[in-house]
Length: 172
Image (tube, rainbow, N blue to C red):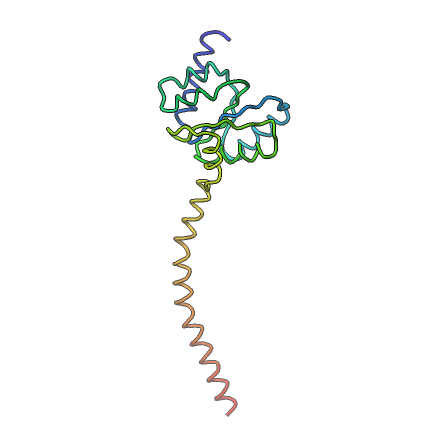
């Protein structure tokens, strides 16, 4: 890899660290190509991505950033999992770590906050952006459906009473 390629990789990594909602750093020593492809597919389905880069280049990309402390995690065979959604990459990484003991989460960052192993686990337990939006929409829609039900209920009660009166009048 020549100098220009290295500069390009450092720039790309800098963009990842800057624009991602969450970045998870993990060791992947011993994973087969098929297992790595599975991780990439799971991450892609969740709206994230996986990147393997030289630790030295990643450390250079972290220099001067609020999450520069993350450089301490970059030792050995590391892989970066990241997503714009501040929870998606952490959820996928945690799920994958449960399924595969060779994938060991070291830590990461959420926004400008550096996370340790426990922090990544905590982030993975948060509801995702889509889940929060669905929950909020459900909360907004529930009162409206209750009001519609309350408004419609008296009309059905009146109709039931009228049909009962009509039946009694016909019977008499």
